[in-house]
Length: 202
Image 1 (cartoon, rainbow, N blue to C red):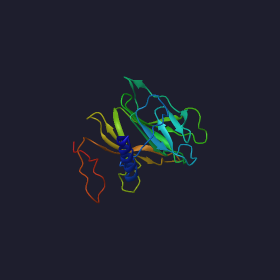
Image 2 (image 1 turned 90 degrees about the vertical axis):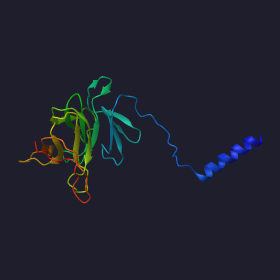
Image 3 (image 1 turned 180 degrees about the vertical axis):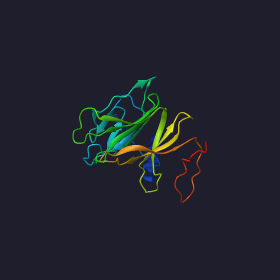
Image 4 (image 1 turned 60 degrees about the vertical axis):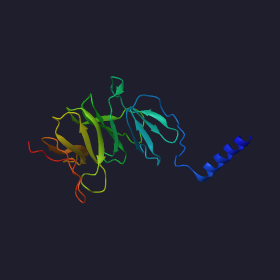
């Protein structure tokens, strides 16, 4: 009895002092296949939703909405990065994704208020497998809106992509901004533009 009292006293003291660990509780949202996810207010209702795999999950109840089809090869979904970017400038976040086996970079157009059904896919680039990608601030404007892919082939040209307005009233697109001949490692320098992309000499 004395031992139990000591244990309880120690537990109370631990609670009183606190712990570095934050007690999270796991809530299962979906048990389907996925490789990555993005967080964005997809339907502009003021709540952050989840984009993962072929679906987006609407907060706060995490209602599932299927918006695209993705290939499933060799026990994984061929989709290795998702990014929320308003590509067409309509105020709704679209989804930019990269794929390895399909060898593509593409974006899916958010239909806006019409949230049911599949979204339209728009190709950005193709020809090389992509392992992952990041949204980065390459032009130092304080906004991480440039897409920087990690191609899985040494023959792939260096490239990063940004949203540009088209001519003659065309809708904005994600277009390659820089292409180099070969890969080199960049060294970041303080007070300068990020040095991740360096144009090769050959």
